[in-house]
Image (cartoon, rainbow, N blue to C red; front, side, top):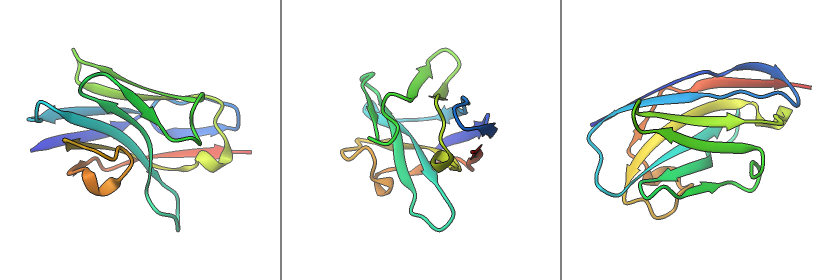
Length: 123
């Protein structure tokens, strides 16, 4: 079992920054992936960024250069630094965990999910 708890969402104006975090705990396989996904009303849940157990990171094209995923191993916290936010980034952001994930942005590859944190960007 893996537990994930997000926090740090909020409301900002376009161009602003936020840094949601995800506290994680529990047993993970040797090869695992921690990811950030988002879901806007009426839209599919989509992958945003992923952090592999080997330290490599992946980003969706829509956020490259603006978002940075990082992990604090001492505190077991996953972060998503979001800069230059746009109104289209408005969504509920979820962190997720999966083992032996091949397709980093396929939500079906992840077994555990947090409850989500709301991010709202106004124009």
